[in-house]
Length: 380
Image (cartoon, rainbow, N blue to C red; front, side):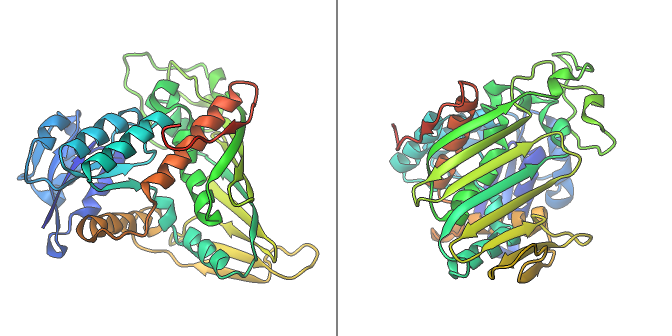
C-alpha cells in the first residue's frame, strides 16, 4: 500500500483525494494545512480517523508515509519539496516547480542527491485536446513544426489572481510564470523541444485602477464569480499588486521552431487557443477541454485553400470524468504509478524547470526594456 499525505490540503490540494484508492493500493492517511477548515471536505471520503497537522515538519517525521502531495503557495514549493525529499519521501509537487530558476535547480539537485522520486503536476499534458494535438504532430501529418502560437483568455483573472497572494511578485515572480507555466510547458511538449532564448512584454493596465481594495489584514476572497464584471467594478482587490495583468512572450526553441504565448486576465471569456504550424499543414484547438455542455475540438488544415473555418478535418474530444476535462484523475494515477513502478508519461522535472526558466526570464525581460534573455543550463 502506497501511503500518502497532502501538504496544503485546501484549494488545489483537494486533488489529493483522487489518489486515495485503497482497493488499488494507494491511501491518503494524513492532511496538513495551516487552516483547520481545509480539512472539512475530506470527511466524507476519509471519515474522522485521518490524522491532521498544521506543521508540515510533523508530517515528514512519520516513517509510515511514503510520499507527499504538495499544493502550498508557489513561494513555499522550494522549502517544502526539499524538506520532503531530504526526509526520504517521494514528492508530487504542484506547478510551478519553484518561483526562481535557482530554486528549481536546488530542488532538482536535492532529488538527485537523495535518490527520491519527484513528480511535478503539469496536468495540461493530460488534457485530451493537447494529447490529440501531440499525436497529430508526431504522426508527421503537418510536417515539421515551425511555429506555435497560444492565446490565453482568462475571464476569472480578477477573481483568482488579484485578491490574494497571487498579486505579489514575492509570492509568484509574476503571472507569466504562475499561470503561464502551464502553457509554456505545453508549447515545449507539442514542439518536442525547449526554449533557448526568450523576450517578454506586458504591463499592469487594468487592476491597478480598481478602487475597491481590501485591507492588508483582511483575507482575500478568490472565489470565482461571473457577476464580477466588468473588471473595473471588482471589489476586494489586493492592497498590493505588482504583477502584470496582461503579458506576452516570444520563444526561440532549440529545434529551430519559434513560439509565442499571450495571456490576459480581464477578458470576458475563458479559453486557451493553440495554433501549431508545420511544413505540411497546421492544427488548432477550439476549446481546451470538454464538458457535457461544450465539446472541445481539434481542427486540421492540410490542403491549400482560401478561408476555411473548419479545415480539412474536425476532431471532437468527448468529455471525460473528472476536473480539468479528466486530466486531474489521469495525472494523479500517473503519479501513483510512478511511485510504484518508476514509470510515468507526465512531465519530467527538467521539463518543469524549463517552463519556470522561461516564465522567470520573460518576466525579467518585460520589466527591463524587453531585452532578450538566454535560458541557462542547470546551475548556470
